Image: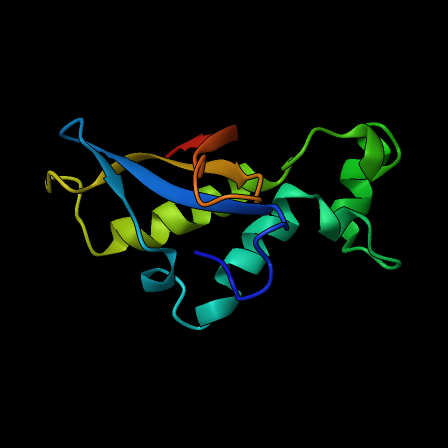
Length: 135
């Protein structure tokens, strides 16, 4: 589904999935993890995938240290260089309400990125990449 008048525009979206202790893969609605962000959640994911926090005029000191320790600029880094940190944070939030003895306790979390090229109402699942973090 797309907004009216934007059929010709491509669209990138993300799906959050968890791997449980029992071995199941489950889809997780991120808004249930970060209710404070509500509709901003997926903007946070897109910004993390694009390394936007590393491109700010005045980045956080930890991001400056990361840049200085690697390529020196965000363009030389792989997409989503901080995504594992976001996933680990969300995994910790989820696992707070699912003790290690629970079959729903997560052992890993991943975000899959897909692109819909637009133009027609089909081909919604063009896979782009995934990020995964062990918890």
